[in-house]
Image (cartoon, rainbow, N blue to C red; front, side, top):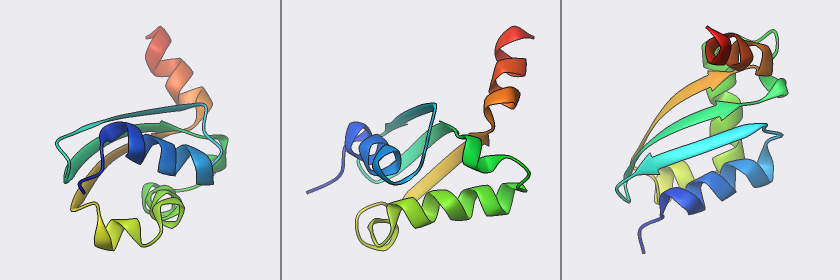
Length: 82
């Protein structure tokens, strides 16, 4: 069974403190916007590693590709206002 965008969103939200998780996709390729205070002070690769850790083995078994925008709450707020 292919995962749905909602299921991928739930996997992330269940395992990573998030203010916003928005996921779209077709069952194997997904795009996600993830806003988390856990990203504070971390570079993009470390942020992505946190998301991969939240997804665990699902990245190997269920999800073929995941494109991510990972933002801190303040980065998200700045984008929303500007």
